[in-house]
Length: 82
Image 1: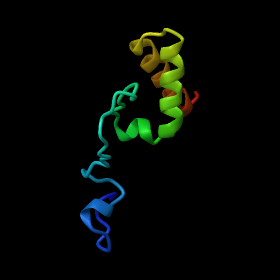
Image 2: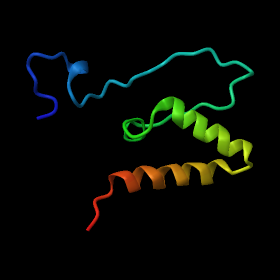
Image 3: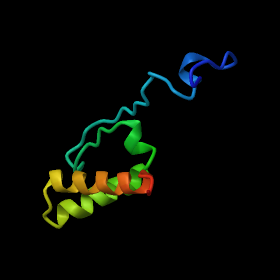
Image 4: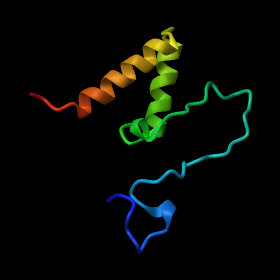
């Protein structure tokens, strides 16, 4: 039902296999690159996510800890309470 709107092209449907891709030149001043699925981008603003990661890296946290905490925050926002 999310892909059957006859008035929209395939890439305009609510659910699509077409990725949103940004092409940028990698420079020495870049701290990191974030590759994430729409499950993350639907929950977190891209600038806020980069600020969050940068701040935590500067505090000496490991990337695995940073991402685990991020996912915990995303899940807690969307998890239904019983």
